[in-house]
Length: 246
Image (cartoon, rainbow, N blue to C red):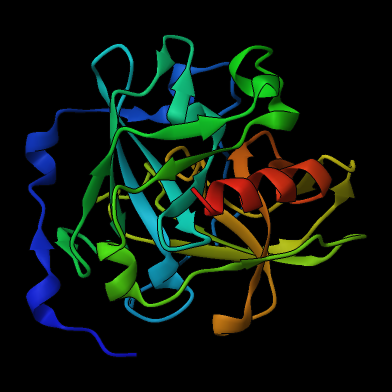
């Protein structure tokens, strides 16, 4: 796919005064490396599906800066964890979205939003089963450069799952890392798995299939070995479809 170097930004990560993963803002259990760390670094983040995955720089309700991950499902809709857009202090003040970030390079540029969505199961009840949300971008400029997004579907049983995002335990935390494994449990509302992750990957996609044909089956957000994702099913798919149209 075409990538124009003129789109690129260089982001001074050292000057952002980051306070760690967004998981630290809520009741979430930090994401975990399960046994031997066999994550693989994604070196070409301008190819699908990795260019659909975004680094999030979050200015939380408390005014401090945190990191998370997200992914495109439409021209203006970035799906992420609920705790990335709404923490104990309320809605985030702003989130800077950087698709396909690779080190200090933002190959498609970046865009900042202050429009977010989630569900009351998370914002009111803090129920991990409902910990998902969306960043609604102010325009299509990033999408016009990325030129694509994930499809989504309900996956049943115990599928083989892929995950890629921006873990905070890697230095720098602005590189994308991948791992895969079969789901070990399907609770109906969550998938559980032993895929290696770390804080900062909250909001990253869990998908089935390979390459640009991959379909998102959940949004990663919890650790504990097994690690966990909110499953894309029923009401989740309905909300995502609504948010995609905003």
